[in-house]
Image 1 (tube, rainbow, N blue to C red):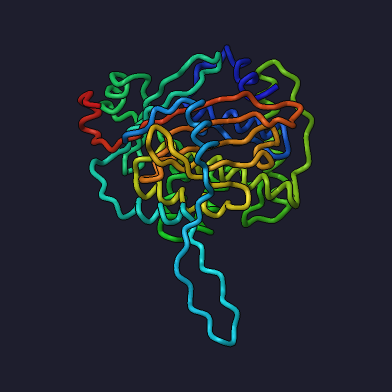
Image 2 (image 1 turned 90 degrees about the vertical axis):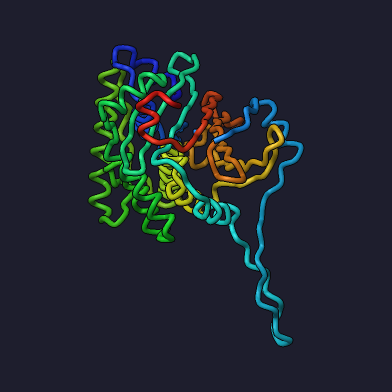
Amino acid sequence: MDEMDLMKKLSDVPSPSPEAYDRARTALRTAMADQPMNTVTRPKRRFSWPRASIAAMGAAAAATAVVIATTSGGTPATPTEAAAPPAVESPLVKLASEVEAAAQPGDASLIIGTKPAPDGSPYVFYTVYSDKGQVFHGGDPKDLAATVKRNDDQATDFDRKIMAAARLAATGEVDKAKDGMLTAANRNFLGIGVSPAEADKEWADAQAEVAEMFRKMGKEPPAPKPRPTGKALESLKNNHLWSNATHALFVGAANAEVRAGVLKLFSTMSDVVTVVESFADGKRVLTLTAIPEILGGDASSALTIDADNGLPIRNEVFPAKDSPTPSQHAVVSYKSSRVTLADVAAGKI
């Protein structure tokens, strides 16, 4: 049973926000596999964006996809030494630098996302992330305006931590930012900066919480599993880095610092995330694909961003062909823009 099936069992629970919905799916995946799958966000999981269909995107990628490698000039070899290969700059790092250098109007980011609801129907959600760290949600522009007017800040501790980690990465402290992104959910079972015993306790506590979720759904809790080690632990870390960084991008995409930081974090995942250039509706795009091994083995996740400004366009899950329990195909689309909170409160979006 995949996470969408599990979420359908929550029919007696009030509908969660898009972010809470995705984090719940991640928690459920933690119980279902040693390497929980990434949230589709938004999370899982928002400027001008190409309205490419799935078929158009696939055809364009198949016809024109080329793996990007931007090279910078190397130091000329001396007569007594072999010529060294030119240094290769990650296309994501290069794009991050361009994003940081671009001017930013407004004081907030508006994200309009479309994703499948638990029953499979399209679900459109509106989110505003202010540069001060506030988060406002709404089911439509009018609802969003009312939320902003009454200053109903719905930012969670998780939101604040992933945004802080993304901003830190933008300053160049990528390793420290990775640790912050990996521990943003307040459960350090990955063992970041703690002893194995402390990490084991965190793991046990997390599984106990998931078991309670299953019991509330009227389902038999999954059997406890030992905390993964070795390669399995590295896959789990990559899963959480991908999942939490994409969530940060989807919520704060139109903020240059957040976007640049996320791109720099993604650039550290070159062993498990491929970067491919293609065209969609005449626009150059980059598609970042996370391999199934870091997503529980049941799917790959393809994040498409605008190659000129780094804004997310879509996040797509493809079932793994060789998995006995492949995930369902799913697509989340995003449209992002810079706005002012005053305009949002006045309904001018």
